[in-house]
Length: 211
Image 1 (cartoon, rainbow, N blue to C red):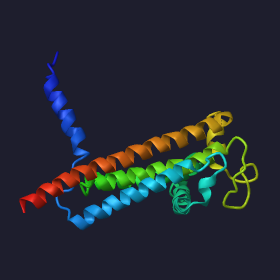
Image 2: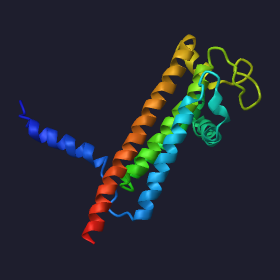
Image 3: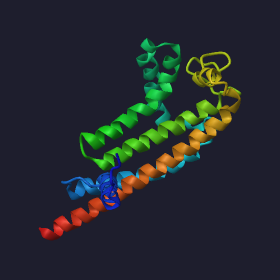
Image 4: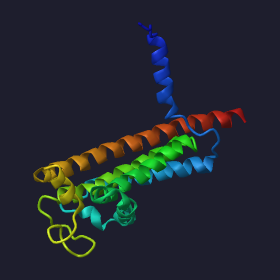
């Protein structure tokens, strides 16, 4: 059986689907709008600093953001304990990414707040950038872990995980890739937030003109 698909209908559906991700909030006062603009400016500046940390030496480990992400990472290990050793070890990194990613999804589906979702995606990108040095370090461990030891002398998630796939020799490649991809996602998130605010500005201007 052959079904005819109207290209125009498909295009319109896709356009509407993508536009939904850029729709601003229905109601927003000027103070909230400019507060979000200020937040975006601050995050953009901070993003540059986070991305330019040297992932090869684990420089981000001394940042404020790492101190936020570390307890989340450790909580992930605990949450995944019922699922066996491999998932317990993966769970730290996985939860570090899944928590902000889940918050981004919640902002879209529950709050219909695309700006909030973009900030959630930004947080996810920072989490990936924060993981990059840990992945990179697995080949020749130098990072000091929580217990005060380095990877060869103590538990190192990514030595175990990469060894399980026979990929430890490529650890530096995967670490560099994680850093670069995190930077790309960060750029997408900031651009998304900016596009939503631009539409919010147009909506706010129209609303003020009507008043």
